Length: 247
Image 1 (cartoon, one colour):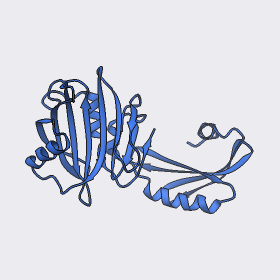
Image 2 (cartoon, one colour; image 1 turned 45 degrees about the vertical axis):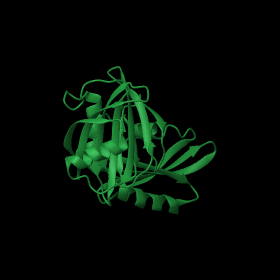
Image 3 (cartoon, helix red, strand yellow; image 1 turned 90 degrees about the vertical axis):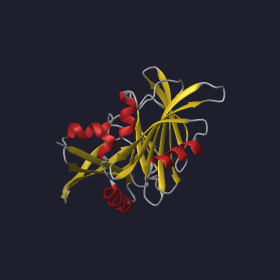
Image 4 (cartoon, helix red, strand yellow; image 1 turned 120 degrees about the horizontal axis):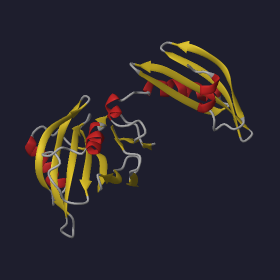
């Protein structure tokens, strides 16, 4: 599978050229080592490939050529933590990802980040069927939300102007929680509708994702949830402690 033609595409940005040094099988992985050149600098590259069911997982690492020990250390660390989150595959592969504070969620490529950073709430925004939505995500300290009344109390505290509409159990992977639709008004009295996703994470962490429209409408859970919102919702999972947004 890994022909010179395919590998040339993988290392095309290294305009000084590349050459394969060796390849070997290590357990369930195929490891190929490379020498790469760019702007008169030489680097070491490593590609680690393995199968996970019907998916091919590919990890590529590049380090300066004078630090082969760094390449080995990174390979060991990243290979051990390279995880295929199957729930995230509910969305197209080119969607963007937020992975931070123990959760992962994905959103369309044409949405833009408004605010946020590692360890802080993220907000991204985009259009769904001509209506603009804002997705806000965060993790907060909380005892598990076990019953519907606790969800209503959380919603009242988090969004004081909101009125809960439909509240339903929601689970993703090994995490259980709730989804709740609500109606809200902004400071000018304009109606807005939204959907809150709440997952009880480990160590008394509550994982939160809020999808809020910028105009009023029907109860998003009583009616058919738009396909884009459904895909965003279905990618929301408890997923370790990775941090940051990725393309």
